[in-house]
Structures are given as structure tokens and as C-alpha cells.
Amino acid sequence: MSTVILLLITGLGLGALYFLIASGLSLIYGLMGVLNFAHGSFLTLGAYIGWEVARVLGADNWAVFIASVLVGAVVGAAFAAATEFFLIRKLYERHIEQVLVTVGLALASVALFDGIWGTDPIYVTGPSWLGGTTEILGASIPNNRFILILAAVLVLLGIVAFLKYTRYGLIIRAGVENRSMVTALGIDVRRAFTVVFAIGGAAAGVGGVLASSYYGYVSSGIGGSLLIFAFIVTVIGGLGSLSGAAIAAALVAVLQQFANFYLGGTGDFVVVLLLAVVLLVRPSGLLGSKA
Amino acid sequence: MSTLILTVRGLSAKIAGQQVVEDVSFDVPSTGVTALLGRNGVGKTSTIKGILGLIERRGEVTFYGDSDGDGDPGVRLDRQRTHRIVQRGIGYVPEDREVFSKLTVAENLRLAERDANPRREFVAELFPDLVARSGQLAGTLSGGQQQMLSLARALINTNRLLLVDEPTKGLAPIIVGEVADALEEAAKTVPVLLVEQNLQVVRRLAAGAIVIEGGRVVHTGDATELLDNDDMTRRFLGVHAEAGGQTPADSEATS
Ligand SMILES: Nc1ncnc2c1ncn2[C@@H]1O[C@H](COP(=O)(O)OP(=O)(O)OP(=O)(O)O)[C@@H](O)[C@H]1O
Ligand SMILES: [Mg+2]
Image (cartoon, rainbow over all chains, first blue to last red; front, top):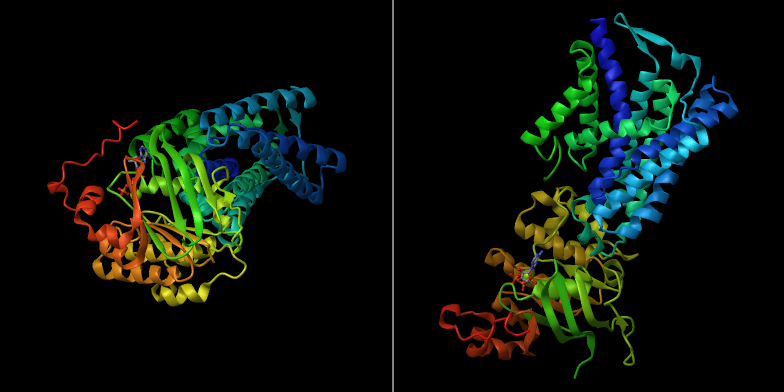
């Protein structure tokens, strides 16, 4: 029983991490039709900058931890908005070139991170509570899982509220459905593109700081390896669907944890299998609108 | 000769590399309803989309809506992006409504509001049903209600020109009448370029008529005169298609 609880909560923590990346991927794809392979780099930069903040201000401190999460969000948002503005926008509607440019940026930024911070992983510490565990029904749960889940829920609620209650949110929801009609109402939909990138980048930046806490280290490859699973989550949830991404993130990560434990480390394989099954049975994903 | 709100000169447009509008020229007067007519697939919708920049286009489109003076030199729309064109005061009611199905009626309208003082009361008076359904998702509205919403989206702003594409398509006769009423009301204050297959509606609303065939303008003139001429309606609009057969409609043959 305690193992099941541990796997479940750890899975949800990992799912929270997937969601922090997948939410942005899904929004960006939904509105612009761009598969953003550079999204992992937003996360990695957030992780490094978050670590720098902790290093300068002192790691074992809640205020510093929260500050590093917020700085990670800002840095991720800025990096993402700049990516949209300087690279993606120039290639408006040229989807293949857009994908290629994001792949190029992903490769180049990893090399840049290696150049700045070295190729060895940097071990991070945070407030001591984060490194500890909490007993739940006999299972010792690492505390950082709770923070991850909390952060993902807050990000989900924040994005939902933004989409529901702001004018940009309205434009984004309408644009996901029919972009050209939005422009035909006199709205410059390209501004919403920058906003969507910034939101996705902020969520990824938060994810970066929390991922370094989850894994205990930062490395230049941290975003890229999570990105693969985030893509799978996005496809399973239905490209462009935020709630689909949330459900799929939890599903994929929990399944992965259980398969790793009970089926001899086959977690990744089971996830890919799930992807194949979803693509065969429901090609538009769990909550996707059309193929 | 009345003043003009829009002139189109040598407009050509492509969709997916295929020429769908070819060297189209016509004028839209600054008052009343002008009908844009022609058989299915001749390029009426593409002409409207070309004016709005929703599809790739070439040619001169000049809009005289920025001043009331006679000496208005007009602004060229053909190099501008769609949202800028619309912001100049051009309302668009697309073929097939294109309401945002996952947004509520109220959200559809709110999204469309461009002006500092949107004409909410005017729209509410014209379409009381939409007020009653403001919280309903637009995708769950009936076809007629969606058409009203699509019209309301355009009429909520003070426009200088309306481009309306087949507003009565697929609607029951009584709803066709309601749509025509709304258009007639709107046309009292704003000129309308109207694509319409229902010739009774054209007869009721339109002053001028432009006929397109194979992506080109083949006739312009008075709407009533055109509709009263059996020979022309048969040739241009195929009203009695089975009696036709002599139509020079080969768009491929004419380069
Ligand atoms: N997306 C598209 N891809 C390829 N061809 C298209 C596309 N849209 C329109 N066309 C072609 O362009 C031509 C003109 O179409 P358009 O919609 O402008 O005609 P229309 O006069 O509005 O017809 P209708 O009265 O049926 O609405 C047609 O031959 C049509 O097949
Ligand atoms: Mg049409």
C-alpha cells in the first residue's frame, strides 16, 4: 500500500513537471500551429537562473526559493517572448521553417548553456524541508513532490483564469478555433502569439526551477529530456487542449512510475505504447477537437 | 453619379496557387446595397476575401471611408493586413457565419467590439433572441441564430462599409425575411456589398448589381433591371440552368 501511495504521488509530481511544459506547448500549437522544440530550453534557462539566484542569496531559505521560482518564470517568459518576436514571427505561416528554427535554437542553446555553466551537472539544494520527506499512510513522500503538484495546480488555475477573464484570453480562445476570423474582426492576432509564448515560457521557467529541485541537479539536457515526454503528453491530451494536457500529464507520469516499479523499468516503453494506442484509437487525443 | 465608398481595379486572387479571381474591377457606391452575384464557385467569396486580405491578392482596392469630403483621395487597402483594413471601418459577415462555437454569444460579441462605444442597444433591439441567449455557447445555436450573431458581430461597431457574404444561405423562409429586415435596417446608415443567391432578397434590398463569372466581372448595372431581364438572369445566374447551355462560362478557355 505504501508503495502504491509513493508511486502515485511521485507520479503526480512528475506529471506536474510534464504539465508545466506541456501547457505552453499545447497553447502555442493550438493558436499558431507551431511545434516548439525550443520549449525545453526555456525550462533549462529557468533552472540555471533559479540556481544562480539561490547561489547568490543563499539556498536554505523559503523566500529565496520563492524568489528563484518567480525569477525563473520571468526569465522563461522573456526568453520565450524573444524567441517568438525575433525568430518565429519572421516565418509567419511557414510551419516547416518554424519547426526547424526551434530545433536549431534548442541545439544552440544547449551548447550555450554548456559553455556558460559547464557540462557537469550542478547539484542544487533548497530549503531543508524540500529535501525531507513526509509520512502519508506509511509512505515516505519526498516533500518537493507536493511543491511541484501545488505549483502545477496554481499554474493551471492561473492560465484558465487568464483565458477566461482577460481580453487576450478571449482572443486566444477564439484564435485557437478560427484564427483568420479573429483578424477579420479587426484584431491583430500576432500580438496574442507573443502573449502565448510568454505564458508558456513562464510555466516552463517555473518548471525549470522545480525540476532542479526534483532531480537534485541542473544540467543543460534537463529541458530536452522532459520535452520529449511533454510532447507525448500534449499529443495524448489533444493538441491545443489545456485540460487535455493536464489530464494526460498526470496519466502518463503515474503510468510511467508504476510501470517502472512493477514491470521492470519499462516506464518509457509503456508511455510510448500508450501514445501509439491513443493515436490509433483517438488520433485527435483525449480532448482534442479535430485531427 | 453618387459618391463611392470602395473601388476595385484589376483585383486578382489565388487560393492554394490557383487563380480564383481574375482582373476584377467594380465600384461600390457610398449608400445602399450593392449585390455581388454569380453562380456557385465563380469567385464571389474569394473577391470579398481578397478585398479583406484574407487570401493572397493583387490589384488596387481603394477605400474612401476616412473623410466625408468630396476630395477624399482614398486609402489603398491592397497592401494592408486584414486587421488594419477592418479597423478602418469595414464590417465582415462571412459565408457560413464563422461564429466561435466554443465562445458564448456574449463573448463572440465582446470579441467583435472595436469601438469605444459599441452599439450594444442597437444590436439588442435588432436581435432580442441573442440577448436572451447571451450565456449560450455559439456552437449550440441554430443556423439562423448563428447568422444573427454573425450579423450582430458586424453591426455592433459603427462601420463605413459592410461586406456580407450569403447571409440567407440555408435558412428557412421566415428567417430569410428576418435577416433581410436586419440588413435593410443596417443599410440605412452604411453601404453594403452583398453576396446573395436569393433573388427576392436581392430585389428587395439591392440598388446596383455586379455579376461575376469565371473569376471576372461580366455585368454591372441596376439590380432591378437585371432581375427583370429573363435572358440575363438565365445567362448570368443560371436561374433556369436546364434551359441554358449557351453560357460563355469557360474560365479556363479565356486566359
Ligand atoms: N481553399 C480552396 N482551395 C482550392 N480551391 C478553392 C478554395 N476555396 C475556393 N476555391 C475555389 O475557388 C473558386 C471560387 O470560389 P468562391 O468560394 O470564391 O466562389 P463563390 O462564388 O463564393 O461560390 P458560392 O456561390 O458557391 O459560395 C471555386 O472554383 C472554388 O473551388
Ligand atoms: Mg461563396
